[in-house]
Length: 628
Image 1: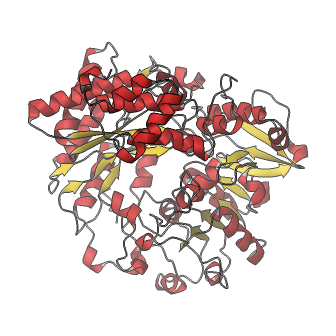
Image 2: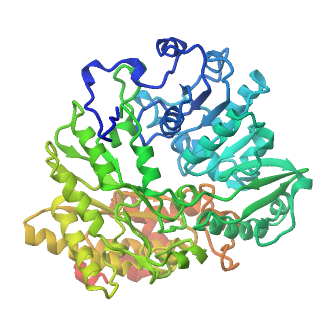
């Protein structure tokens, strides 16, 4: 797909061959002229040859380095295991990429109810992957091929690399490497890691001797554990954490800080039984050249032909989108992005972005509209610390909370340039921003005229040209107490942003809506907080749609508080709604406008002695501007 002048060759979508994808069957392997493969990747997702799908990224990365790679998407683990046997033993290793989502989040709701669909499966069919595929797949492979190295990667392994609370089983589990018979976990974004592993195996090194690869987790004899020093942090053991939840909470502070260290941090150690889990430091964030190289690999950007036109919902969402960067420095307490990608932003060059956007315009179903020019956060492109020596010493999990770092360069001009260059491409009628916009960046006042003017211009450009009728933002709550635990800005900033949004709409003759996201039952949130949220959002004339109950996922501050009852950074106790009754008591306030909820809400507020809130929610004689 790539030519010597670094331009993406036009794809003839009407004449694509199966060999344009990585092989998923022996027949496809033979069509490439191969008799065997070097690496077999097992994926919990359907195989979509797109840079948003992990197995495709790792497969293309290895292919570009000269390795023969096959992918087995969504293998059947309940029959005669033919999917696990069809390629035989690879020359180097098996890789497990369980999916773009943690399998338990994919399978279950916040109420632990089984979901009826799977967005990463053809026709959204459920039941195509097991719970904990990293464990299930690796146990099968270890039984069939006891001597072949097995490497687990992806979100599931990354977020479960040390002892973690599993909400769906309601228990503390050890590192995934204890439960899954894998030789190594590759955590975080895996391109650099997998190339080092493959290269060292290629040179004849034993997998058991590879205990120092950056961004990996290995299981060693307990005798290998060093003393706590400047280069090693010895965490409380799994058994200690089982006995004392506060020890688990204290562990997490170290884990999060090292995940967000610019240099990659120090080595983490956690004893588990007679073994010790060793977590090697992360790689620094990718350079622009490195991230360009990953996104410029010869993806077809299409699902594999084996699916014969079946709809894959997750692909439909991103098929005409372009990702601009990796990483997020927001540090939200409930979010796993920084635990997996880190807080330091790795941004693509404008040339790389434009090459991919051009490729999107050549897709046969493209109608002129790019669905998203975004990233983990829509507007962090090319941002970071001015003085890198300050960043090198910093262990703050967020560059924005409790207040924006004074060293942070939040200049929106490079991003505005990208928007304008993409919109100028032939065939592009409009580009939208579907990723979440951080309005605490666009509303930030730095005192630097050029940067502050660019932030205002960004708001104007965003609202005028890049909103598809509804702009989604995530204030998450209205209570300052809850927002502080969430590591989010005061709701007053949302009010200011909404005034800007409304003003631009009025001046431009637009009738666009702003759609806020909110979370109930987050640690620190009480029923009264939710009642006040209902009153405040009613005053803004919102009937909330984008809402969710807090779901504890591994490797977040909020989950550690939910499990332990303590805040990892302060050691203080924090109230959290845990029972279904407590959760429903909070969630109902989202729907105050639904008459079926009115009697329950009224009774609850009477018990809380808050007749004033009942009046504000249900007294029709009160106008919206009096609700505050």
